[in-house]
Image (cartoon, rainbow, N blue to C red; front, side, top):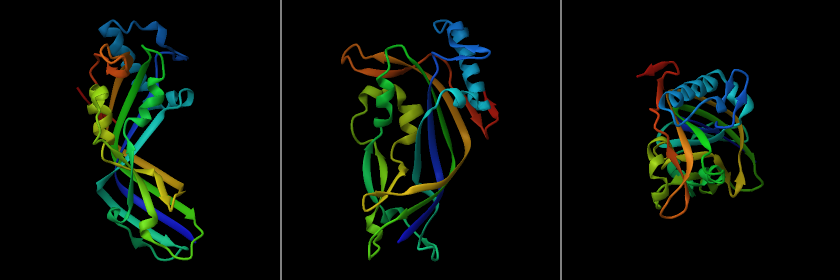
Length: 232
């Protein structure tokens, strides 16, 4: 049995890059004194430009976290064996809770002082998934999807609430779409951002708990609308 699912709706994407060790043509991160406010802001402007041009993605593969707003789904359909598409409600899906802190764990494995650029984008997402399943009877209850659950404690990550957790908390995770435990394959994905915000963070250590965390650097976040209009 072939299952095909199409989804359109409001999405949040966070791209995370390590940027303190970049050595690129016309850009050397060591040339900036990040303790100096003017240098820090120039560094941020340069990183933004590298992301906008796509150059940074060629040398530094970002860690991407992508969520779908369950209240902002415009269309979700299911077809079986290439039959007619039928509406599928998010209420019909079984949610599998995922900790919103999980995508950050590999980042916190870096040494203290490592600098990361977080680019949070909001816009419209379009997905197509397929799965070949061996079952005599179809049940929509067997379809499950990941869900970033933020009901637990996030005390260690308070400084990230605005740029990271506010974006991904309580969103569905389409990449974690399954049927009876079997993963769907993503056939296509398009994302059209309408709001973009970039910020810089440093890996630090909590003096009280000794745990690693990400602290925002004292550099105003750069915000863009429609991928081009900058807000001062």
